[in-house]
Length: 135
Length: 135
DNA sequence: TTCAAGAGTTCAGAAAAACTGAACAATAGG
DNA sequence: CCTATTGTTCAGTTTTTCTGAACTCTTGAA
View (spheres, rainbow over the protein chains, first blue to last red):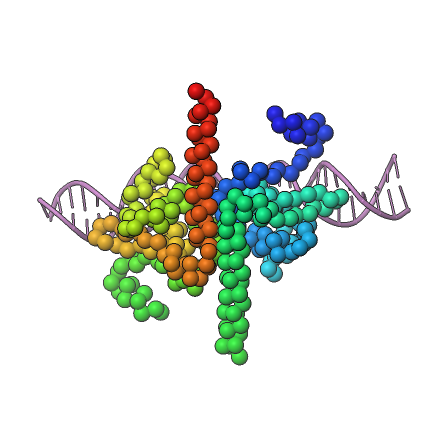
């Protein structure tokens, strides 16, 4: 048994599970980011300089997300190795592990985040065009 | 109604659905490639010079896949915009649309395929190390 | 110490999605 | 026409995801 796990179980704490970089899988990353809500959350965390707590995502792209669902989304992002979550008092700080993942899979996350940005811009442009066509 | 669709419906054929490049989504691509079987199929199609039919994947990485399941996997890859399928007589030829997707999302597919290759190499190395430890 | 409020997690039932055997279509070659 | 081959569709089963309710843990005030 891992000494850290033993310590944590003796202390009756449930530490958050973070895979080590070598245990991160491509499938896990792709699966985690194949959900619109999760990729929006991840893009936000990557884009922000300071870490974000979970509840700041109770509404993502004009859609209300129940906090139990949000908790699952964060768990999936965390266990895919995409983010690191740390308790700070009553709330959680989430920060991206993109540097680590970049070391193992160069170009992967950059490609995904860039593609996501391109898609957002295209959607915004299409929306403007549709609005212009109506009036 | 799209004239091509009308023609096809009059002819009672069911053409395969291929989204145009601008309708391809990041989520769709990530979802399609988040499955081990599908990413293996896709990597194979990308790697091969000539197009492959579906049944050549009835066993993927030492695992037998029912052909109904395989048909669904190909449908998902196709409707994500990752491959183009063409009937040639009784069988289907599948070829990659990576050049088109590269035009819309530069670096995305390269990053994913490269990451997949890195992971395969790491797994092979870990396997060799485990075998060496045993004997 | 006790109480209340806030952030997140866990659980279990409901809803949605994936898997797959069986039946089916479509084609090529006898 | 008959058969073999390739792939699709359908429906029932299995698996996964979603989410409201109850719960834990921490902070801060009384």
